[in-house]
Length: 57
Image (cartoon, rainbow, N blue to C red; front, side, top):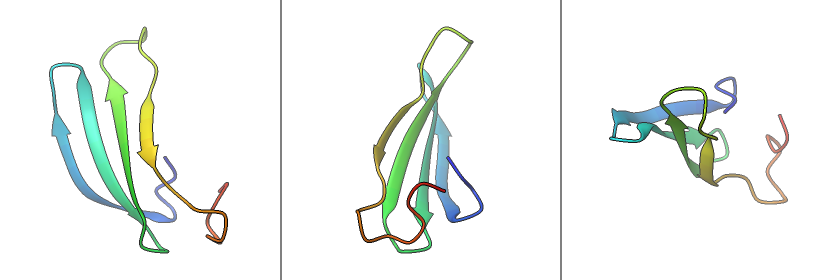
């Protein structure tokens, strides 16, 4: 998750890891689950559409 173009809206812990909600400068919401430990993979939902100028940054 690139925090240069995102503003963190919410961050909280769960039994699996830390859930972070952020808002892109274009207004779209994103959710990321950052798991505890090194075994898990980050899970993300939401993000940029093809017209967002912040896509791929």
